[in-house]
Image (tube, rainbow, N blue to C red):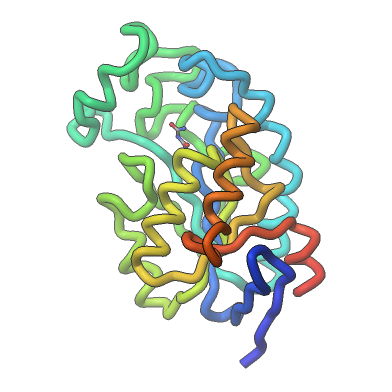
Length: 221
Ligand code: C5J
């Protein structure tokens, strides 16, 4: 079996493509385009839009290499039965999950704003996981979908670094996956939080996993 070694921190990250998936977290209009959930919370969405070219390059690389590709969407059922009040009732009343916004009901499955942005649209054969939580494993079929395919290693990208990406990576780490976060393919509305998350993940010998720039992955492949 072919083994790939990536120059990563805190040490080299080694994986076999046939047992590795790329997990792209929540690259949705709701977070990245004006008028969605992210902007409704008072954030500058242009900070997230900046990583779209890197994520697109990473996605193209994963497709060429034959990695399993998983896209996630943070989304709720139209009746909000999967959205606990503790999540729904945060923020100003007119901007809450389920309320109408310029791109449809905020963070509701099937609404225009909930779609993955066109530049990163999933293609046939890729998994799309709708998740009601911040973590990709909570209340989803992701764990089973990965284990039936023999996946042991995960490459992470997407938004936002310290919320859904970090939560998903920690969930994956606890489930025994070896995880690498691609540094320039993830972003936060708060650059300092992104930086802190990268450092937290790879600290203490890689307590949550590894991080590396996209160029290092490209070199390894
Ligand atoms: C947030 C996410 N930040 N995808 N969601 O609410 O990180």
